[in-house]
Image (cartoon, rainbow over all chains, first blue to last red; front, side, top):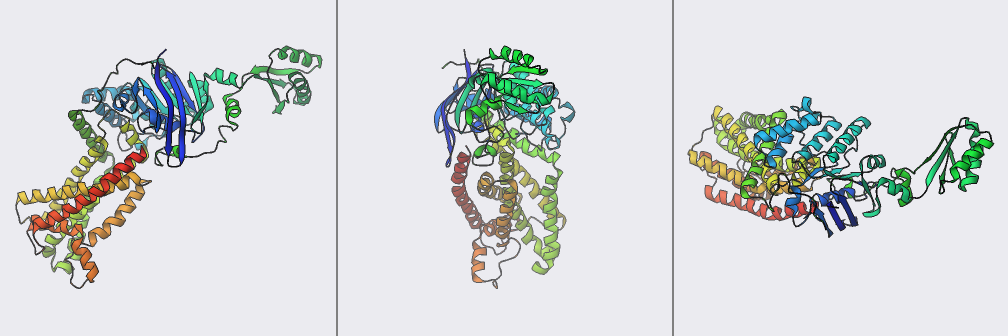
Length: 326
Length: 274
């Protein structure tokens, strides 16, 4: 197995803030690695180290086989970067933005234009190509930003919170684009605070919090790591919830939670399921819905960190690129 | 550790060759100039403002200060040109800050291009803009009666002194651009510094013997005064302001001092961001 990204013991400090406290991670060539964590966890800092924008205080990282510090220039030739804040020149048109990148990458004027036209087409920006990017919507800007990071046909792509601030439709469109890139064999490292996004896109997930990796694995492994499954029963009549809760509680040995007519309880032994069905049948409770599901990533995150992703304390330097180094 | 990938389509070497670096600078200078097309306000900033300054100063202040408009023109045109050069440095700092806050700077730094190209390209573009403003100033001046009393060679020398001065002073603006939290702060900071700096000089009025001693001292030693006297001497001849060469050397000496202070500070601020 080959790795497009390998990082060992990355540490980075900004003033008194320890942004990275020893991050290890690998991304298999051609896979999508999701870097999941709340604001201030160190996701952006990790990406900035791997994309050669900042030097780590300790540890080392290879991207495409090259050291990000010693061989930074070569790494830059292999990567594409789409930051949290769209890095497009708002005063230039879509075409000019992409042509500028093409020219900087050594393409001839004609090839740069051809590549720009091609990418604008692919990202649905052809109609807007001759308008200054400042007139673009948020979703269009993100797409242009992503297009800009693809001009050089990178083998490794860093996407730092690519869908933050986008509406659900634009988010879905961007997901499709990322899947398309992965199908083309591009290795993608994607940071996100959306569990659903990591679940949807990533082959492997690394969960970080306070500059440390706290869990890693495939989405399924992570869910399994938290242990067990969740049993959900929805009686036809909401008034039966109490009876259902009593039966479920007895058989699973856990305290069931009832919300909106749905009774759920953690379950460690799947063999209990048939017993639940029999007991409900004996009691004459008509059941509308009965399922066994794995815990959601949010539940996983809660189990790992003790706090929900949404309620995580917003903190520290990665909030804005203008702050102490992002 | 396993190495993953075959050679990239644009596989670069370990560093950038001088030829590539020059092309990078040219591309980024182009980028900063082509922006004007989509931002007509900047063209107004570069053209209308100099025209306005010349007309206002010449016709409103001129008769009161120089007796007649014609007598005042040799004083005020070089003065405005010098002030304009100083303002041009702020453009560099402002643009740099916009790039940093908008994320463009990160994008550029993630590309396999010469490290110095983003800054050098911007400075080159700003130089072109400044030459344009100077041409506008001289044309308007010429239209209302200003004449070069020296030679084209002297004019060229004046231009070079101005550009050298701006390039050196721009480092102060670069430092501000690197450290300010937002572009507006660069502007406010710039105006607050440049207005007193240009008015506490002989740019618009001769230094009056009636001014307080301390003020006269500041005005006489202000690098702007030396720059203005050098430009004046090279365009309309020495007007009792002292030898041109001396003024030019002192003005550029100040520039070197500013650069000596702000180049290391800027590099440090730059590394801090890293």
